[in-house]
Structure formats: C-alpha cells, structure tokens
Amino acid sequence: MSLMICSTKCLNDFDCLMNTMKGGRVVLLVLLCWNVANFAVIAAGPQTCPANLEGQCGDSEEWKGEFFPGIPKIKYEGPNSKNHLAFKWYNAEEVILGKKMKDWMRFSVAFWHTFRGTGGDPFGGPTKFWPWEDGTNSVAMAKRRMRANFEFLDKIGVDYWCFHDRDIAPEGSTLKESNAYLDEVVALAKELQGSKIKPLWGTAQLFVQPRYMHGAATSSELGVYAYAAAQVKKAMDVTNYLGGENYVFWGGREGYQTLLNTDMERELNHLASFFHSAVAYKKKIGFNGTLLIEPKPQEPTKHQYDWDAATAANFLRKYGLLGEFKLNIECNHATLSGHSCHHELETARINGLLGNIDANTGDPQVGWDTDQFLTDISEATMVMLSVIRNGGLAPGGFNFDAKLRRESTDVEDIFIAHIGGMDTLARGLRSAAKLVEDGALTELVRKRYESFDSDIGKKIEAGEADFVFLEKKALEWGEPKVPSAKQELAEMLFQSAL
Ligand code: XUL
Ligand code: CO
Image (cartoon, rainbow, N blue to C red; front, top):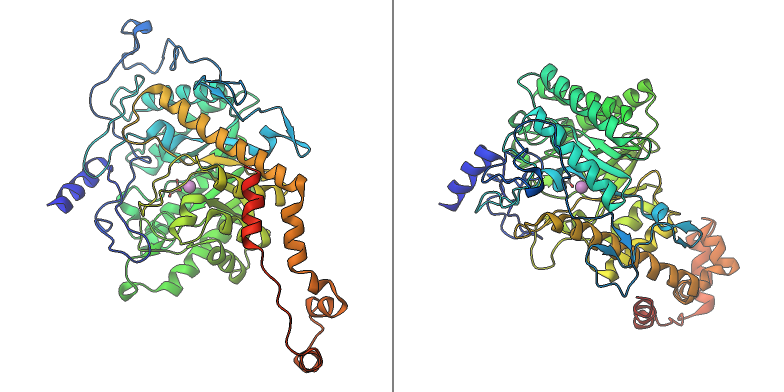
C-alpha cells in the first residue's frame, strides 16, 4: 500500500523521500521512490501574497515588493547576541590565521534546496508555500524566483550560489526549447549578479527526467549518453557565462541496481569517456573553473559509481584524469558511505583532490541523506582542521547543500537555517585555529611518529630499506617498546578548544 502511494507520488510530482537505510539494512521504497523534492518542484497548495503588496503578486514575472519584507541585512553581533537574525560567530571581515573569515568560508546558497524545496515527502505533499510562488513552473516564475535568490544572497551576505540547470529554468518539450528557457533565466541572473556575486558552481540535472532512469553517461542507451552530453555542454556554457568558479558532476543515477543486468566495466569506461569530453570542452570554451566529482555511495542507485573519495580518486587515476578534476566532499554522503566527513576530507586532501565542500550533515539515527544544516561544533571543527591543512578551499568553498526540515515553514526559517550553518562553521574555524595556534595536538601527533625521524626511519620513508636490512635490525633490537597512542589526551586537547 505505502509502495503504491509512494510510486504514484513520484510519478506525479517527483516529490518522494528516499527511504534507504544505512549499512546493508533493508532498502525500503528506494527502487520506486527517490527524493527529488529539491530538484523538481511543482508547487501546489494555497498561494499567499505579502500584505505590503496589496494583491500585486499576480502571475507576472515582475515582483514589486521585497521577497523578505521585515528581514534586514544580517549582521555580526557577537556571541552574546540574542537576535536570531544576527551572526554570533561569523564575522566576515575578521582575520583568522592570516585570512578573512569570508575567504576561508566562501559560503554558497544551493538554489535547489532553498528555492525549489517544497518539504514534500513520500507520505505527504508540500508544506512550504513561499509567498512569491504562483504554483507554476513557468519561465516567468523562474525569473521571479531568481530575483528572490538575489535578495536572499544580499541580505544574508553570501557572494556565491550553486544551481542545476533545471532548478533555475523549466525543461521544455525539446532540448532546443529547454536551452532557450535557460538562456532567458540566465540572462536575468547575470544582470542580478552584478560584479560581486557568482556561482560557486553550476551543474546539469541528469537524474529527474525519466530518460535518465538508467543513468546519463552510464546509461545503456546511446541516445541518452548524447542527450546528457548536450545538457552538460550547455550547463558548462552557462556556468562559464555567469563567471562560475567550478563545475560539479554528482553521479545522479550513475550506478547500478543489480550486476545481473549491468556491464559495469563498460559503464565505467563510458563515464570516463564522458569526463574526457568534458575536459576537452572546458578547454575549448576557455572555462577556467575546476571540474569537481561529488562522491556518494547510494541513493538513488543501490551502488553509485563514485562511492567515496578513495573510489573516485582511483577512478581518476585509472582513466588518466588526475590533474583535471578535484572532489566535492559532502558530509552527509561521507556518513552514508560509513566514513566521517573528516575522513573523506582528509582522503581527498592527502591525494591533492580537496576542491569543495557540500556543507551539510546527516542524522545519526536516520540512515538516509537528510541534508541537514550542520549544527555540531565538534564536526565543524574537524572539517575546519582539514580546510586549514588544505590552505583553504579556493576556488572552492562551502555550499549549503542543506534543506529546511519539512515542518519549518516560515520564510524567516530560511534565514535562521543559513545563519545557524554559517555560525557553526565559523565556530569550527575559531576552534580549529585555536588548536593550530596552541600546537599541543600537532605536537602529540609529531611525537607519536618520531621514531621515524631517525636515520633508519628516514631510510624506510625514502623506500631504501629492504626486508633483509630490516630483518637484521629486528634481530639486533629485539622486542620493540611500544608507546601509548594517547587517544584520550588527544580528545581532551580537542575538546578544550571548542
Ligand atoms: C545529491 C546532491 C546533489 C549534488 C548536485 O545528494 O548532493 O545536490 O550536490 O547535483
Ligand atoms: Co551535494
């Protein structure tokens, strides 16, 4: 029964919540349902119009008033402020470890969650009826929504935004028509961006439309591969036109449900050909942004090809793509793959691949991709330790790939959620900087490995100590004295910085 409800909903309004479970537990509804609530919205339900517009909302693309009346530009007021529409920890111009906070963070708003999220789940329809929505997926509505995006960016003080082609403009009945719609909305976005605001990254949405049911670059159908290539070509063009600093490839439906009907080797070869063509096209149009792969282990397929950072790194290595791509690490994807976000960031970093972070978090009790705003200071501090070790993320940044809970339905909740996420990461930066400046944790780690600072240790690290030599030393030294790892001390030092 619930399967039927869910599949019907998915077909009707693309608005189902994926109900997969972590770690090999039952995957319920996942084959029928997928949460694309934030990628394709067909708004339904009551429309409202702010009082100060006196009914002038209409269906015109021109929006006469403010989208967020009564909400001022968000300012830093410090940790003692009780104002929920103010930053307590994020002070954009403040210098931490030699860099302004805004340059460490490079925050970005995700258009799909913030402006296309409806709150729909498999058990119920939309809960959010933003006043500017007119219930259509028209080009006029897309333009009005774009204006809302820029008012939001201005008020929250964020200079970057991220988008999928199909979040910002509707899909037409032909590729040509879709491209024309996109051009119209992108022209407005360019005008509204001015000289300060840019996309942190753009991407193509290659997973909602039914043609992509078997994947895009890894579809078994040649025509779909070509369609996806054409869509990515156009998305790269518009990202470049808008001055985007990166371009993202999240696998969407690149993966499989069962190996019994899948030629995995052939699909991976196709994916590599697709990426080589993307690199060639990037060079052809002179796009200087970084190409990023965003790993994720499951959802919507049972097994996504870009499982985690290590899998993606090996894929790039095998197909000669290292040097052309970096990784976009998403914290909730990290936990879905059984890792911590810190692990994924460090794996990317030590491979020279840390390019961007999709800043969000999962729920420890709920197994799926809940895409919540990060609120855990300890997690944020670990994230920022990696970012500091990486020397920052530029030209990447922190994209809030995060959504309001279904039950959060006030316009001001959009602000509160982003302020909370920004403050949490800012607090993480402050704590991580304390740890770096204090040096005790760094010293603990250095000391742990200091036996390798000896002449013989150096020989091993240079790859010059063979087994015969080492056997001679082991016989000579006898049983080694093994020191404590000091884990609790490391944890104590970490905690004291929060
Ligand atoms: C899906 C996800 C996407 C990508 C962009 O889980 O994270 O929003 O970030 O396609
Ligand atoms: Co993401």
